[in-house]
Length: 221
Ligand code: DC
Image (cartoon, rainbow, N blue to C red; front, side):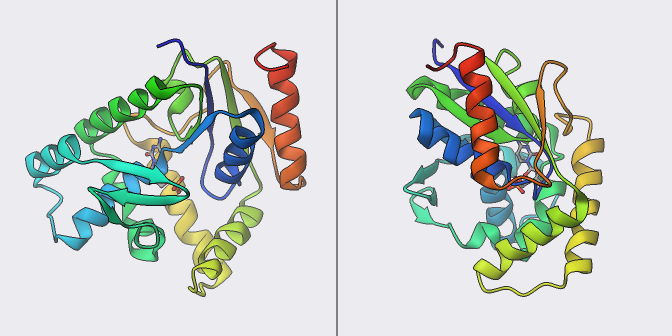
């Protein structure tokens, strides 16, 4: 694998996916939002009424499933699930699905395979720590809790779901706790990650910050 990988991790609602996507566009790298993989499997589990203890069934499905991202649309085995993976039910359940150890191993390998097609910006929770511990550059994005809840609330409004801010914040903090305390691939900053607090920054400033770091490190010109 000779591709350059840029890992961007951080909690939900920090704006990391949009900044990762814009950075990738700017520097002409592929972009992968790893959360999509966990959301796609969670959607399949809910839709097919799979019980949490049906681990073999879940792992077999994940191994044989094809998750594709084309022009901002997400396909699971050919079916367009772009909108489905962002609904509240999936959002609330995805953290508990993401705790499953073997499922994480299979998804992590699928994520590593993404680097076979070229240089890559990938965002998630464990990209710099587990998926690509040797990533060329690692960033860890943070943001004030109330701002994170506001951003998440807007994301739901964009797909037509109105959720009160305090409910949003409560659910978000609950998911943070699950993501940060799970045994396999917990959300945490890699020791060599560059930190960025996006609370008071507009997205263009964030992209510019990351871009300048890449130039300083000689990754891009
Ligand atoms: O970034 P997001 O909100 O779309 O991520 C959804 C969930 O997926 C998140 O709560 C935890 C999980 N996830 C993970 O465990 N590891 C990753 N690399 C990416 C996401």
